[in-house]
Length: 139
Image 1 (cartoon, one colour):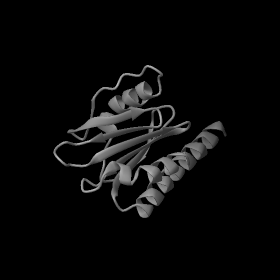
Image 2 (cartoon, rainbow, N blue to C red):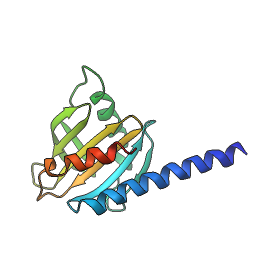
Image 3 (tube, rainbow, N blue to C red):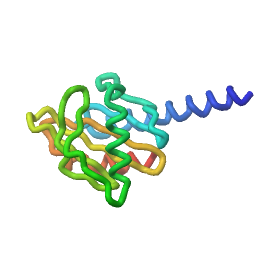
């Protein structure tokens, strides 16, 4: 019975994460990819066009550092072999941009998890920041 309850809770978290990401993508066309990492560091959901599984340890470390009062900014984040330079590093968000104009990353931690998004290279990350942070609050 406990296994069934655990599976239900896990499936419900996954479905909620998937809905949040797809609702975000529907609401803002300049967001090209998204993922949700739960508060324990598990990758709950990611869009098919974006694979964070190989970069999850680095992301968890960057997120953990951003939540510390004296957290150290790593200066860059690599996702799918692309390097993004960190331009803002505060507990509410991490913004990084690829200097070769390959896109932007916004990481929005919340109490229950973290929303990680890939932004259109032709848009500025601040153009979608408000929307992303509002969706992160839904986690």
